[in-house]
Length: 141
Image 1 (cartoon, helix red, strand yellow):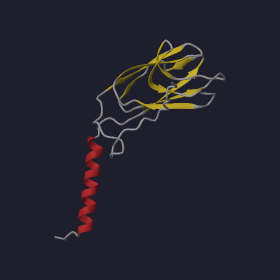
Image 2 (cartoon, helix red, strand yellow):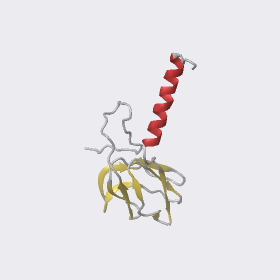
Image 3 (cartoon, one colour):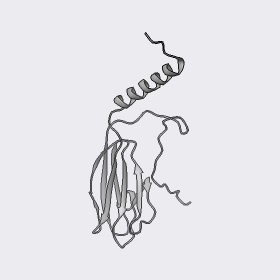
């Protein structure tokens, strides 16, 4: 029988670990696209999984915002800057729940429903720490 050297053993171990984690990782995160057209969000009320990213794209000649909350009451979850035609805004949803959002200019409203389990808590800077891709805006005092 051929004897393996240390490099071959380490390489085999790394490949084995990578295969194990790829097979047991469960559902992979997806990107969901929502278009702003005809003064509405399409699709209006998608159901997504924890870890999925939603990308809103303005297809209209008018500017729009994507702001979390209901009836002009921002709840500080996410807030896009003014989206002009062809521009996008994205946000990754890390916690299950319902996320209503609106455009204050044109009274457009919709909801994102997020299902699944919350990921394990990690501190920022740790390996595997979650990062929001959405733009956040500080309130003025």
